[in-house]
Image 1 (cartoon, rainbow over the protein chains, first blue to last red):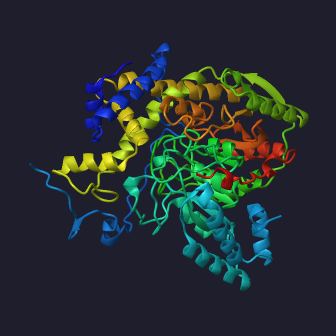
Image 2: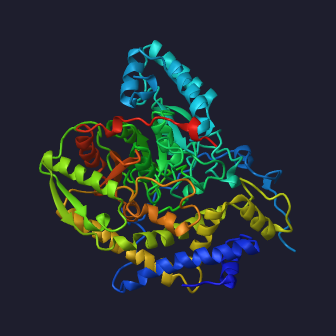
Image 3: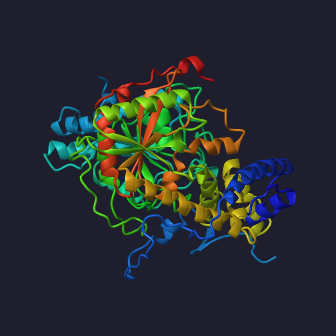
Length: 95
Length: 493
């Protein structure tokens, strides 16, 4: 499967990644190669096969909702690039 | 025998008997790291103060004849994608350069409880994405057997640290072979447990349905010892399974008489290096001499495993890595125009090229209009691959095959071609897709003197049997005792 520059721009946008023109060209080639390789899956007829993501135990794990201590405010904010009071501070959200 | 060369079991005994003092041992390892690691580049950070403090505590316990833990005084290195409270955990990514976790991973907590001494954190491919440790955002780790070669990856730092005597044990993580492949390339023992055997709590997520923490050790008995400590259910990881943990060291010498060993023909086809092939032939001959039956089997969907993996792993990675947005932790771009621009700049500046490539591939496979063709299709083929193993294990007790198709490759050799790099993991990926356990152990050397690894795969939760099978070979051979001669001064750049 060949993908073009437009596709790369679209995926980069979905991924919240900015690419330079050179990077776009490189990724067009590399991702096309990888997607062409992946196309080999189409040789298999899988209509009757169930999709699987859970290999060991496919039952849901439930537990009681017990109140536990959690991180303190200081610990939770310790790694933040910017904070204000009890909040994480970010650049303006609404234009 | 130099102090650095003892196994964990030997060291533990000497520490408990008072023959070696934990503080002295720790100091020697720290010094060894300071002297040797500038050439190997296995570590990203060294925890000198914490390690010496812990060693002093253990020493006091021993002097007071108090009970000590299962790993009393044994030095260990931890891959830098496993959280250590209060100490940097970077995933070898610039985006987590200053990240200091507020909690310990479950495995780290258990190591501390059992009195292991954490020497430091080891290098990896950024976010564990790679097979050579060349994708690290910080440094390139060299293979102690030959500095022109990669140590494998992604847990290349952990494997190189154990191989170069910069630690006795190490932890890594294995999403598509990231423990077994570097173990093979560095000539040490690597175990990837069953998915759900070891808690992933505090392991920074890459491919959540594939990731599993594993061990690097000098021999099989040490692997049993370390797995004993980290295995078992954890309340904080609901995918860890409440399955009893057997005593892995007990009956480790059970032998292989009557054992049915499956040899999958797909793993011995074109592309397999001749030296690796010959080493594996010797392995099978040895097992036959020991009374095992070698049976030809087929895992017919093997050729699709890499394609399935690069959809499933990257789809999961693209979701897991969405959290790096410069808001709550990690790097944030200094200049930006509004929040979306901040996200984009942060991620573009913080992630390396391989991580970007994988996030984009994953998002593509999950995007509207492509989900069925890629992600759903891959999930169906994944079921076929698991079915291959289910079928095989009705006929055989374990599967033996090479860990890596080649004994090694040079730094830079595969870095330009991502697809070629992905194919490095062709023999290790299927076990992750099926969730089964695997062990890699040394079984020979190539013409160039690089170690060769063999891989034993088993049924879910049959790590004990794998360790027995591995030990049966190891005690008859001395490949695991060979040490690299460090030649870094000659080729150092």
